[in-house]
Structures are given as C-alpha cells and as structure tokens.
Length: 395
Image 1: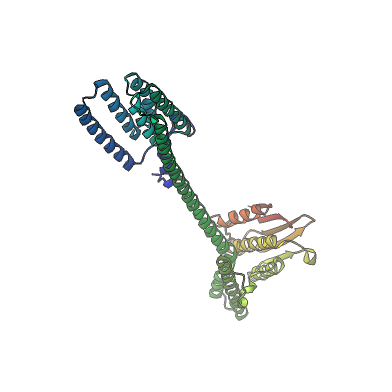
Image 2: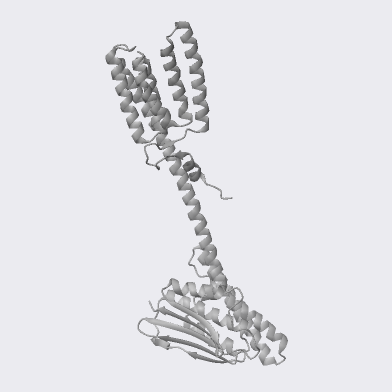
C-alpha cells in the first residue's frame, strides 16, 4: 500500500468540482475546527431558542435566525454551499424584516468564507454581504444609525482573520511539500552515492582481487620455484594496488584530495595500466599483443580514467572466463576526435564460457560509463573469440 507524505495529506484536504482554481474549490476545515464550529452552532441554537421564547420573537424571524445558524454549521460539511445559502437567504431575511440582524450574521461569517472557499467565491460573498448591510441600513431593518458601516467593518475584520488562517494553511502546505521534496532529493543523493561506491568497488578493485584469486590458485597447481615466485609477486602487487584503490576511494567518499603515502598511486595512466595488464595476462601463459599510440596520445583525464576502468574490467573478465586463452590483444587507436580501446581474446582452450560475468553488472557499468561521456560501447563474441570495444571522444 502506498503511503502518502505530509504534502499528499494536505492535498487530500482540498476539494474542487472544477479543479483547484474553480469557483467551487474549497479547503475543508480541520477536524478540531469542525467540532468547535458544531459546538458553537449548537450553543447558538439553544440560546436563540431561549431568547425567542422569552422575547416572543415572531416565528418567521426566529426561523431566519435558526436557518442562518444551520447554514453557518454547514461550513463544517460543504463551505461553498453554506456560503451560497447564507447569501441567498438574505433576501428572505429582508422580506421578513430581519435584514439588520441577518446582515450581522453574514458579516461574522465572512471569516469562514475567506478561510475555506475559493478567492472568487470569497470576493462575491463579501460584495453581497456589504450590499445586504447597506440595504438593511437603508430600509431601517433593525440597525442603528451607522449600523451598515459597522456591519461592513465587522465583515472586514472577520475576513482579515479568515485570510490569515488561509495564508497559514498555504504556508503549512508549502512546507510539507518542501519536506517531501527534500526527502526525495536526499534519497536520490544517497542512492547515487551507493551506486558510485558500488561502481568503484566493481570496476577498480575487482581486477586486483581477481588477480589475487587466480594467482593463489596457481600456487597450488605449480611446483616450479620461478613460477611460484612470479605468482607471489603478482599477488603482492595486486593486493597493494587494491589497498591503494580502496584508500583513494575512501578519499573520494570523504571529499578530501589529500595524498597519504602510497595512496597517491591510485591515479594510473592508461599506458601504464595496459602494460601492467599485458604482463599479468602474459604470466597466465597467453600470448599478449599490446598496441598503443605512444607519446602522440592526448586525452582528457575523465576519458583516460574511464578507459582505465574498462581495460581492467575487460581483463578481469578474461581471467574469470577465459584464463586458458592462447591469444589476447590489447589495442588503442585514436584520430583527431576519438580514441578507441579494444580488448580481444581467443576462445579458451579449457572450454570456459566466453560470455560476461553471470550478473552482467560489469558490462552494464562499462556501457554506462562510456555512454555518460558521449561514447559507444560494444561487447560480444563469436567462434573467433570475445571482443570488448569502447570508442570515446578524446576531450
């Protein structure tokens, strides 16, 4: 079940037959205010009944007073209907000679109208109220001299109070919406940071950990002292590089740029990375061909960093799924606008699957990185082998 936030709860308290800006739009009173209004109306009806008996108020006039109180109570149900009924009954009150007291009831109710009803209905109600007060004063229906102006002043004061409540609710709804928005932005930022950390762990450290695992297995299978010594050095280098990358990643997460000890070695060039991969893959017994433009290569740091990640990830996949491949090719080509990295390996003589890792996460993240920087990424295999190709703008 979907849970609504504060802003959604506030929106649920707003009703309209023709949309938010419709003439009949209204904001329902809070539950506490509805109960208080019902209590006031109940007390008013009781007092009015007692006064009508004591003063022997004519039945039509007493009915008008009762109707006005009931209409005011209707604000707890449908404020627009209550406002229209109150305004329309002014004609009946004038006809029965009770226009003066009724105009006061209209004026007092202005605050309820401006607090709950649409702006257009509120303005219309205020104009009608002022008109009834002036008419009642003009025909002398129960208003003392200057009573019409007094009714208008009372309506103005009531309306300002109601408008203040309306503004307070609007600010409350806006704050609730801001809180919801900040929660969504915070959740999105946390998720983005999690994705970034997962990306760093997978694309930077996975290669070194895979190298450690492969070399540790090799130590168990070979007895040649030279080969075992080579595997030990490879394990040490890969573990050191993994530690360096972890430290660098922690600096990125913490937002610091300080270099402590060998942690600064995390920034490795594409040329150095490919040479390290050539040696590592070659020690597996494969014939590794490396093609690199050399000193002529000039690319931006972000492009080079991305290519380093892709090269490491592609080599990691070779170690996982084609570690008995007899031939591997690492090639970098470039022109005036683009640079292309290609990692190819022949089918493994041991029959390992040349497809990507089981989750597909590595290929997906490589593709995301390249696409983010405006490049193209392809990965696929056939009977001749498996190829990973990334083409990116140089700057």
